[in-house]
Image (cartoon, rainbow, N blue to C red; front, side, top):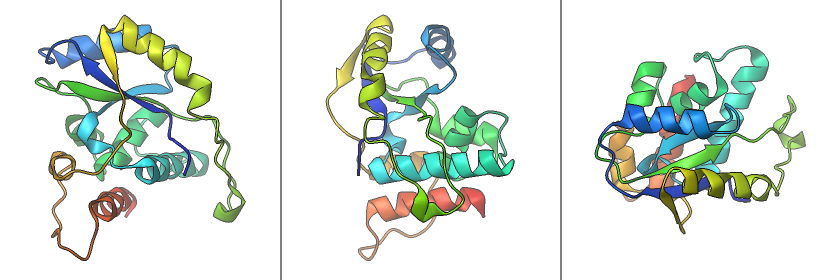
Length: 181
């Protein structure tokens, strides 16, 4: 699976005022397809691509719960129908040390899921912009790809049982699906 356009950022200090960081990020980002995502809530490439596809599908069908694609993406990642809760669970918070800078891909989707292809260059197309954002926010690039953690499941309020029959990634995906039920 190709890398989703997401770059880890380690802030130079622990976040003390997340609203200030968001305001700064929103002023620096090239367009509204860039979002900040809590570091723990990105579980894998499959998880991010699935959330993006669900967001795009809702957008195409005119069934988005949120008013914008970036908020809809956060809502789906959070596995909730409430946008406010999505920002609380999947957005950055005070005391966070890191986050994901995400660029929502501009790929058109087909009604038939089998006809859809992922642009393998989605990550590379925006790497320069992402590095510029990281630098302008006085952060450092985290050289790691998303991985599922128990802390991430707790943050998004995963309430189902976790046992040896399901992987952590499966738990994230099941939670994501609950946002559209």
